[in-house]
Amino acid sequence: MSIGEEELAGRIVRHLDRGLADLDAGIGAKLRSARESAVERLEPQPAWSLALAGARGPRTSGRQFNPVYVFSVAAFVLSIYGVVLWQQQQHIEDPIDIDAKLLSGDLPIDAYLDKGLDTWLKR
Amino acid sequence: MSDFLAEVERRAYKQALFGVKDRHVALDIVQDAMLKLAENYGARPAEELPALFQRILQNAIRDHYRRQRVRAFWISPLSALKGGEREDDDSDPLETLRPEPNPKDAAGPPAAALEQAQTVGLIEKALEALPPRQRQAFLLRYWEEMDVAEAAEIMGCSPGSVKTHCSRATHAIAAFLKSKGFEP
Image (cartoon, rainbow over all chains, first blue to last red):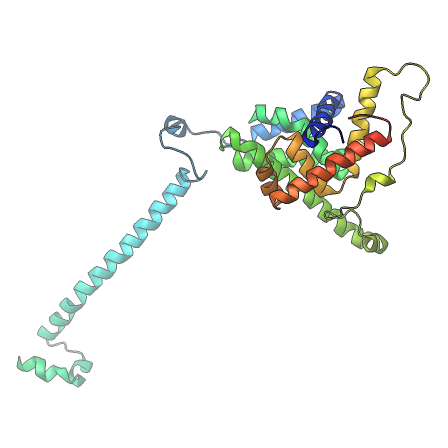
Protein backbone atom coordinates (compact mmCIF):
# COMPACT_ATOMS: atom_id res chain seq x y z
CA MET A 1 0.00 0.00 0.00
CA SER A 2 1.47 3.27 -1.13
CA ILE A 3 0.01 5.47 1.62
CA GLY A 4 0.34 5.02 5.35
CA GLU A 5 -2.33 3.45 7.47
CA GLU A 6 -3.09 6.66 9.39
CA GLU A 7 -3.44 8.62 6.17
CA LEU A 8 -5.70 5.94 4.73
CA ALA A 9 -7.88 5.94 7.84
CA GLY A 10 -7.98 9.75 7.73
CA ARG A 11 -9.29 9.69 4.15
CA ILE A 12 -11.97 7.13 5.02
CA VAL A 13 -13.07 9.20 8.01
CA ARG A 14 -13.26 12.37 5.91
CA HIS A 15 -15.68 10.57 3.59
CA LEU A 16 -17.73 9.53 6.63
CA ASP A 17 -17.79 13.13 7.88
CA ARG A 18 -19.08 14.34 4.53
CA GLY A 19 -21.73 11.63 4.65
CA LEU A 20 -23.08 13.03 7.94
CA ALA A 21 -24.31 16.11 6.10
CA ASP A 22 -26.63 13.92 4.03
CA LEU A 23 -28.28 12.39 7.04
CA ASP A 24 -32.06 12.15 6.71
CA ALA A 25 -33.79 15.30 7.99
CA GLY A 26 -36.20 13.22 10.08
CA ILE A 27 -33.31 11.51 11.85
CA GLY A 28 -31.69 14.89 12.48
CA ALA A 29 -34.91 16.18 14.05
CA LYS A 30 -35.23 13.12 16.28
CA LEU A 31 -31.63 13.45 17.40
CA ARG A 32 -32.19 17.12 18.23
CA SER A 33 -35.30 16.22 20.21
CA ALA A 34 -33.37 13.49 22.08
CA ARG A 35 -30.62 15.98 22.87
CA GLU A 36 -33.10 18.52 24.21
CA SER A 37 -34.74 15.87 26.41
CA ALA A 38 -31.32 14.89 27.77
CA VAL A 39 -30.38 18.49 28.52
CA GLU A 40 -33.69 18.97 30.37
CA ARG A 41 -32.73 16.10 32.66
CA LEU A 42 -29.59 17.87 33.78
CA GLU A 43 -29.74 18.57 37.50
CA PRO A 44 -29.95 22.32 38.17
CA GLN A 45 -26.82 23.55 39.92
CA PRO A 46 -27.58 25.07 43.35
CA ALA A 47 -26.50 28.70 43.81
CA TRP A 48 -24.04 27.89 46.60
CA SER A 49 -22.43 25.24 44.43
CA LEU A 50 -21.86 27.83 41.69
CA ALA A 51 -20.42 30.22 44.26
CA LEU A 52 -17.91 27.56 45.31
CA ALA A 53 -17.04 26.60 41.74
CA GLY A 54 -13.29 26.65 41.24
CA ALA A 55 -12.61 27.47 44.88
CA ARG A 56 -12.12 23.93 46.14
CA GLY A 57 -9.80 22.22 43.68
CA PRO A 58 -10.64 19.31 41.43
CA ARG A 59 -13.92 17.61 42.05
CA THR A 60 -13.58 13.90 42.66
CA SER A 61 -17.17 12.90 43.26
CA GLY A 62 -20.51 14.32 42.23
CA ARG A 63 -22.15 13.60 45.59
CA GLN A 64 -19.66 15.05 48.07
CA PHE A 65 -21.48 18.40 48.35
CA ASN A 66 -24.95 17.02 47.97
CA PRO A 67 -26.96 18.44 50.95
CA VAL A 68 -28.72 15.10 51.54
CA TYR A 69 -25.38 13.32 51.62
CA VAL A 70 -23.84 15.88 54.02
CA PHE A 71 -26.91 15.76 56.29
CA SER A 72 -26.96 11.96 56.47
CA VAL A 73 -23.23 11.85 57.29
CA ALA A 74 -23.69 14.50 60.02
CA ALA A 75 -26.68 12.60 61.48
CA PHE A 76 -24.66 9.40 61.55
CA VAL A 77 -21.70 11.04 63.30
CA LEU A 78 -24.00 12.70 65.86
CA SER A 79 -25.79 9.45 66.62
CA ILE A 80 -22.47 7.64 67.17
CA TYR A 81 -21.35 10.47 69.47
CA GLY A 82 -24.65 10.19 71.41
CA VAL A 83 -24.26 6.45 71.93
CA VAL A 84 -20.69 6.91 73.23
CA LEU A 85 -21.82 9.65 75.66
CA TRP A 86 -24.70 7.51 76.92
CA GLN A 87 -22.42 4.54 77.54
CA GLN A 88 -19.95 6.71 79.46
CA GLN A 89 -22.82 8.06 81.59
CA GLN A 90 -23.92 4.49 82.30
CA HIS A 91 -20.41 3.60 83.55
CA ILE A 92 -20.48 6.57 85.93
CA GLU A 93 -23.98 5.93 87.24
CA ASP A 94 -23.59 2.18 87.91
CA PRO A 95 -21.20 2.49 90.98
CA ILE A 96 -23.30 5.38 92.35
CA ASP A 97 -26.40 3.19 92.25
CA ILE A 98 -24.65 0.32 94.01
CA ASP A 99 -23.29 2.59 96.75
CA ALA A 100 -26.72 4.10 97.27
CA LYS A 101 -28.32 0.68 97.56
CA LEU A 102 -25.63 -0.49 100.01
CA LEU A 103 -26.09 2.57 102.20
CA SER A 104 -29.86 2.28 102.18
CA GLY A 105 -29.69 -1.38 103.21
CA ASP A 106 -31.41 -2.44 100.08
CA LEU A 107 -28.61 -4.87 99.30
CA PRO A 108 -29.30 -7.40 96.57
CA ILE A 109 -29.17 -11.01 97.66
CA ASP A 110 -26.38 -11.67 95.20
CA ALA A 111 -24.12 -9.31 97.18
CA TYR A 112 -24.25 -11.58 100.23
CA LEU A 113 -23.17 -14.51 98.14
CA ASP A 114 -20.15 -12.60 96.84
CA LYS A 115 -16.94 -13.86 98.42
CA GLY A 116 -15.42 -10.41 98.40
CA LEU A 117 -18.26 -8.80 100.41
CA ASP A 118 -16.78 -9.65 103.84
CA THR A 119 -13.41 -8.29 102.88
CA TRP A 120 -15.01 -5.14 101.60
CA LEU A 121 -17.10 -4.71 104.75
CA LYS A 122 -14.01 -5.11 107.00
CA ARG A 123 -12.16 -2.31 105.24
CA MET B 1 -23.52 19.53 27.58
CA SER B 2 -25.88 20.66 24.82
CA ASP B 3 -22.97 21.73 22.59
CA PHE B 4 -21.15 18.48 23.19
CA LEU B 5 -24.22 16.37 22.35
CA ALA B 6 -24.93 18.46 19.25
CA GLU B 7 -21.38 17.81 18.07
CA VAL B 8 -21.43 14.02 18.57
CA GLU B 9 -25.07 13.05 18.00
CA ARG B 10 -24.83 12.31 14.27
CA ARG B 11 -21.65 10.29 14.59
CA ALA B 12 -23.15 8.46 17.56
CA TYR B 13 -26.25 7.60 15.53
CA LYS B 14 -24.10 6.29 12.67
CA GLN B 15 -21.97 4.27 15.06
CA ALA B 16 -25.07 2.67 16.54
CA LEU B 17 -26.53 2.11 13.07
CA PHE B 18 -23.37 0.35 11.83
CA GLY B 19 -23.68 -1.97 14.81
CA VAL B 20 -27.39 -2.71 15.06
CA LYS B 21 -28.41 -2.09 11.42
CA ASP B 22 -31.82 -0.73 12.43
CA ARG B 23 -32.62 3.01 12.37
CA HIS B 24 -35.16 2.91 15.17
CA VAL B 25 -32.98 0.83 17.46
CA ALA B 26 -29.99 3.06 16.68
CA LEU B 27 -32.02 6.15 17.58
CA ASP B 28 -33.19 4.54 20.82
CA ILE B 29 -29.62 3.65 21.74
CA VAL B 30 -28.35 7.19 21.13
CA GLN B 31 -31.29 8.70 23.03
CA ASP B 32 -30.68 6.41 26.03
CA ALA B 33 -26.96 7.19 25.96
CA MET B 34 -27.66 10.94 25.97
CA LEU B 35 -30.10 10.63 28.87
CA LYS B 36 -27.70 8.50 30.91
CA LEU B 37 -24.88 10.94 30.31
CA ALA B 38 -27.01 13.92 31.37
CA GLU B 39 -28.51 12.20 34.41
CA ASN B 40 -25.36 10.58 35.76
CA TYR B 41 -22.49 12.72 34.55
CA GLY B 42 -24.00 16.15 33.95
CA ALA B 43 -21.68 17.76 36.51
CA ARG B 44 -18.47 16.32 35.02
CA PRO B 45 -15.96 18.61 33.28
CA ALA B 46 -16.44 18.97 29.53
CA GLU B 47 -13.17 17.22 28.72
CA GLU B 48 -14.39 14.00 30.39
CA LEU B 49 -17.64 13.87 28.42
CA PRO B 50 -16.39 12.26 25.16
CA ALA B 51 -14.94 9.19 26.88
CA LEU B 52 -17.94 8.85 29.22
CA PHE B 53 -20.40 9.16 26.36
CA GLN B 54 -18.53 6.63 24.24
CA ARG B 55 -18.41 4.18 27.12
CA ILE B 56 -22.19 4.47 27.60
CA LEU B 57 -22.85 4.21 23.86
CA GLN B 58 -20.59 1.20 23.31
CA ASN B 59 -22.10 -0.60 26.30
CA ALA B 60 -25.59 0.03 24.90
CA ILE B 61 -24.58 -1.36 21.51
CA ARG B 62 -22.99 -4.40 23.17
CA ASP B 63 -26.11 -4.95 25.29
CA HIS B 64 -28.16 -4.93 22.10
CA TYR B 65 -25.94 -7.68 20.64
CA ARG B 66 -26.44 -9.75 23.78
CA ARG B 67 -30.22 -9.33 23.78
CA GLN B 68 -30.34 -10.12 20.08
CA ARG B 69 -28.36 -13.30 20.66
CA VAL B 70 -30.62 -14.42 23.49
CA ARG B 71 -33.71 -13.66 21.37
CA ALA B 72 -32.25 -15.57 18.44
CA PHE B 73 -31.49 -18.50 20.71
CA TRP B 74 -35.10 -18.78 21.84
CA ILE B 75 -36.77 -17.92 18.54
CA SER B 76 -34.67 -20.04 16.25
CA PRO B 77 -32.48 -22.88 17.54
CA LEU B 78 -30.92 -22.96 14.10
CA SER B 79 -29.67 -19.37 14.39
CA ALA B 80 -28.16 -20.20 17.77
CA LEU B 81 -26.26 -23.09 16.23
CA LYS B 82 -24.91 -20.76 13.55
CA GLY B 83 -23.86 -18.29 16.24
CA GLY B 84 -25.14 -15.07 14.64
CA GLU B 85 -22.78 -12.07 14.72
CA ARG B 86 -19.93 -12.80 17.05
CA GLU B 87 -18.06 -9.97 18.72
CA ASP B 88 -14.72 -11.73 18.53
CA ASP B 89 -15.22 -13.08 15.04
CA ASP B 90 -12.33 -11.90 12.91
CA SER B 91 -13.46 -13.50 9.69
CA ASP B 92 -13.92 -11.15 6.77
CA PRO B 93 -17.61 -10.70 5.97
CA LEU B 94 -16.70 -8.09 3.36
CA GLU B 95 -15.97 -10.96 1.00
CA THR B 96 -19.64 -11.94 1.08
CA LEU B 97 -20.95 -8.55 -0.02
CA ARG B 98 -22.45 -8.41 -3.47
CA PRO B 99 -20.58 -6.24 -5.97
CA GLU B 100 -22.02 -2.78 -6.58
CA PRO B 101 -22.28 -1.27 -10.04
CA ASN B 102 -19.31 1.01 -10.64
CA PRO B 103 -20.37 4.57 -11.53
CA LYS B 104 -17.21 4.90 -13.64
CA ASP B 105 -18.54 2.11 -15.86
CA ALA B 106 -21.93 3.79 -16.23
CA ALA B 107 -22.83 5.72 -19.32
CA GLY B 108 -22.12 9.46 -19.19
CA PRO B 109 -19.68 11.42 -17.01
CA PRO B 110 -20.00 10.44 -13.34
CA ALA B 111 -20.97 13.39 -11.20
CA ALA B 112 -18.54 14.09 -8.36
CA ALA B 113 -21.41 14.29 -5.88
CA LEU B 114 -22.74 10.92 -6.96
CA GLU B 115 -19.31 9.35 -6.69
CA GLN B 116 -18.86 10.88 -3.27
CA ALA B 117 -22.23 9.53 -2.12
CA GLN B 118 -21.39 6.11 -3.48
CA THR B 119 -18.01 6.11 -1.78
CA VAL B 120 -19.66 6.97 1.51
CA GLY B 121 -22.27 4.29 0.92
CA LEU B 122 -19.59 1.69 0.27
CA ILE B 123 -17.57 2.72 3.32
CA GLU B 124 -20.68 2.51 5.48
CA LYS B 125 -21.52 -0.89 4.05
CA ALA B 126 -17.96 -2.05 4.69
CA LEU B 127 -18.14 -0.78 8.29
CA GLU B 128 -21.43 -2.61 8.86
CA ALA B 129 -19.87 -5.80 7.59
CA LEU B 130 -16.73 -5.58 9.74
CA PRO B 131 -16.44 -7.70 12.89
CA PRO B 132 -17.81 -5.57 15.78
CA ARG B 133 -14.49 -5.21 17.59
CA GLN B 134 -12.69 -4.02 14.46
CA ARG B 135 -15.46 -1.54 13.71
CA GLN B 136 -15.49 -0.29 17.29
CA ALA B 137 -11.71 0.19 17.38
CA PHE B 138 -11.64 1.97 14.01
CA LEU B 139 -14.48 4.37 14.88
CA LEU B 140 -13.16 5.21 18.34
CA ARG B 141 -9.59 5.67 17.18
CA TYR B 142 -10.09 7.52 13.92
CA TRP B 143 -13.62 8.95 13.82
CA GLU B 144 -13.80 9.94 17.47
CA GLU B 145 -10.08 10.82 17.40
CA MET B 146 -9.32 9.05 20.66
CA ASP B 147 -5.82 7.90 21.45
CA VAL B 148 -5.06 4.20 21.61
CA ALA B 149 -5.11 4.10 25.43
CA GLU B 150 -8.54 5.75 25.63
CA ALA B 151 -9.99 3.43 23.01
CA ALA B 152 -8.49 0.43 24.81
CA GLU B 153 -10.06 1.51 28.09
CA ILE B 154 -13.49 1.89 26.53
CA MET B 155 -13.21 -1.44 24.72
CA GLY B 156 -11.82 -3.21 27.77
CA CYS B 157 -8.81 -4.60 25.94
CA SER B 158 -5.09 -3.91 25.56
CA PRO B 159 -3.70 -1.04 23.45
CA GLY B 160 -2.04 -3.67 21.25
CA SER B 161 -5.42 -5.19 20.45
CA VAL B 162 -6.80 -1.78 19.51
CA LYS B 163 -3.89 -1.22 17.12
CA THR B 164 -4.41 -4.65 15.56
CA HIS B 165 -8.16 -4.14 15.14
CA CYS B 166 -7.63 -0.67 13.67
CA SER B 167 -5.06 -1.92 11.19
CA ARG B 168 -7.24 -4.81 10.03
CA ALA B 169 -10.30 -2.58 9.74
CA THR B 170 -8.47 0.11 7.74
CA HIS B 171 -7.01 -2.38 5.30
CA ALA B 172 -10.29 -4.28 4.95
CA ILE B 173 -12.21 -1.10 4.10
CA ALA B 174 -9.53 0.08 1.68
CA ALA B 175 -9.40 -3.32 -0.02
CA PHE B 176 -13.18 -3.39 -0.29
CA LEU B 177 -13.25 0.06 -1.88
CA LYS B 178 -10.52 -0.92 -4.32
CA SER B 179 -12.40 -4.06 -5.28
CA LYS B 180 -15.31 -1.81 -6.29
CA GLY B 181 -13.08 0.51 -8.28
CA PHE B 182 -12.90 3.33 -5.70
CA GLU B 183 -9.86 4.92 -4.16
CA PRO B 184 -10.28 5.96 -0.53
